[in-house]
Image 1 (cartoon, helix red, strand yellow):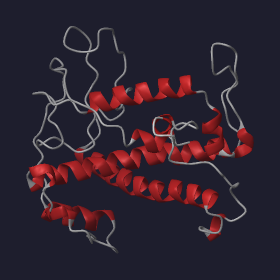
Image 2 (cartoon, one colour):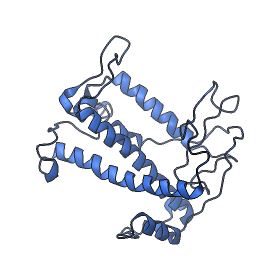
Image 3 (tube, helix red, strand yellow):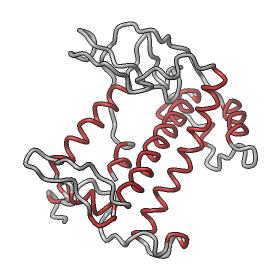
Image 4 (tube, helix red, strand yellow):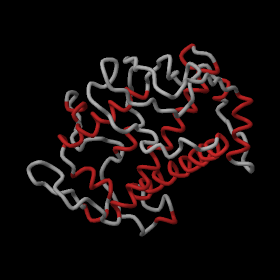
Length: 254
């Protein structure tokens, strides 16, 4: 559930990191580029855009900026969904860290293989720590500097800026970057990188269907016939970050 929320948290751009070794490259995609990409991603389905979003201009921005936004959103949602899908399977099978989850010795919850119920059992303090980290990562991902163009301003969709330490960045050393911390892709060919990016998009799309399928089967029994009897029923609200409706309480809602 936290993985779904992570994709929805907004952010703002600010810091201007110092120059790093990765140069910014302007990338302005058009509908024609999407049609070519679609054929590479799925030759059978090809380009499918029933809502005609590829010709839209959100918030008065250009079509190229809108396409950059949509491409980045899909890649990011796909990545979060892959985390969610793998995490769901791990928790459904009882995998958890053996050490205490909290300073008071509280262990990681189990919830008998019911991942949404497991999330409900996590304390609000722990959830706020998770959301704070998500908020920072979102904030950093929106950076637009001479060395890292924003995805709506000619930057590469899905590209995450390097962490920068010092006066113009994070005020402490950061030994690893969020993307490729061990530099495995340093000597990878551009063709190989492009192939892996296409695989990431396809895997992300499949993961989005997978995690929503799990949650649908739990909340509306019989909605996913293949999962009937495989996943346990869940009576809670899978899209709510907290068990207590803090915002609703102000309006008399529970």
